[in-house]
Image (cartoon, rainbow over all chains, first blue to last red; front, side, top):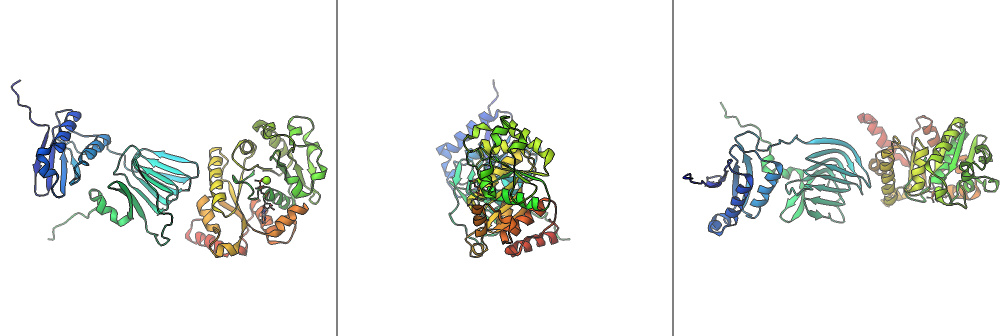
Length: 226
Length: 258
Ligand SMILES: Nc1ncnc2c1ncn2[C@@H]1O[C@H](COP(=O)(O)OP(=O)(O)OP(=O)(O)O)[C@@H](O)[C@H]1O
Ligand SMILES: [Mg+2]
């Protein structure tokens, strides 16, 4: 009895953005419900609808699954100005089953064939017209993508599709479908990637990926001059 | 087996000419026409009027294999086992074809199966009998797409590394961008190129006269003879009609890929 229930979700503002502390002693579903309530609740609308704000999520000792991360990201998506910067767990990796990195497969996906994969996939070879490559994660084709690619098949909007030669008949990320222009600009020889931008799929040159996925950006360790 | 996916790209023409060219280099060759109901090879060889028994008679044991084989007019060691014209496709099954090919292999250096178009039963049965495959395509998107599908199916059936013949190439059209070039086709299908046959009216004339172009001095005839040499393991460079391809392959060698 007597014990006062402290909130499951605590929010702190810093000069970098917002810190969300998710209490690790409560079930994840309870946290999600509270978070949902807080994000939807109008009292706090002045924070939520303000300028763009970076969000860091502190999980305490909790680690989460990729699926739970996805749910969290989807929840935050209702507040367009809140940008999730990253997750932190005192237990080390914030993911419960750290992904086994990217997996590589080689070969050719021919007309009428379907390559299905779980996780991020590096495919060294071509995907020919009429062939399909799908994965729950991102898809990187080291070769020509001329068929259909579907990344994030289980609903991961953060998945991307990249290819040395990006000439697909169709691209899908999560449930979003896009058909490329009927005529590609022949000059486009640079490596490109596709990602979900708002409600649709956009295609950009590879070097712009660091702007879209800053959390993945590689940086040279910073040394102070002696 | 000679197959393509798409119809009319030149499977039968290729079968007859490769068979002829192989036998011209002193190999014993047997051609099997499995296009039941749409018999063709006999016409291309000018042997139509000699047919007494056909492949269905053989598998139904109405005659011995030997009785149904027809010897070519020109080549000493070229034989044809004709398709049946009046029966339907269901008359031949995979086991029968497997048995037939095994028997013929005892006696011949090469047994060439000309497949019907498509990827249905006729194609499936031919797979049962074959241990190597040649894919014929023309440099057109639809034909290449179908060839790609067939290669995928063959890989699943463990017919290792099919080889490619690109038929009816028109250099003029490639130059003005109206036709895929060889590099594009080979890059897309990602299998070894066995040869390129130009689009040549001699092929049509030869077919109508029942005299395979492989006997002639035309460009197409030479192309088929080169293919036969490559089948026997000889290294023969591609003819000048695809100057660019030569460059491409040589470059690959330099880079250490080939
Ligand atoms: N290299 C060539 N140059 C010109 N004409 C050709 C060439 N190759 C084939 N042809 C012509 O194309 C037509 C179709 O050839 P063919 O019958 O060999 O095709 P196929 O693939 O066996 O057809 P099907 O799928 O009906 O069995 C014929 O009229 C033939 O003469
Ligand atoms: Mg035919």
